[in-house]
Length: 210
Image (cartoon, rainbow, N blue to C red; front, side):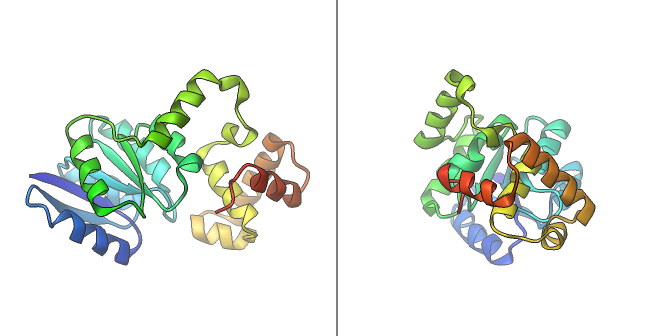
């Protein structure tokens, strides 16, 4: 039996994933968590074979939680789930130690296959992600500006280009308005941008707009 910890802040998503998983007799959702902090607590108390981890959560996001999991129990396979296009987040997840990466619109049977594969100690990487990894390894000199951002900076950049206010971002990420402003300044400096309009233009040109 494959015991799974499912981490997602949306109840409807958790229910849908649970139904897909528990149609298979060889796997079950042992526990559910709605935040990264809750997931880390459960991992410290229970034994899991696979962690299904949403990449976008309030507070400690999926990438931050993944890194903490790998520090605490490096052998647990973590399968990342995301609404985001692979090219935006997959590389960051794989580099941070994820055993696989799936978008939430993947077919149910693909989720089951991915869980079994990471449980067996292998990686589940789609052809698109494999291509991105190869490109990243052999063409580091051609890295785009946004690839030099930290995971949190990248997350905030995505919110900035959607027109979110500092207050809205602070609430969504459980950080202060001042911290958001600090991140905004770092992002603009690293991206060599003078204003949000330039950032939006860059995002459109590089297919970073959802």
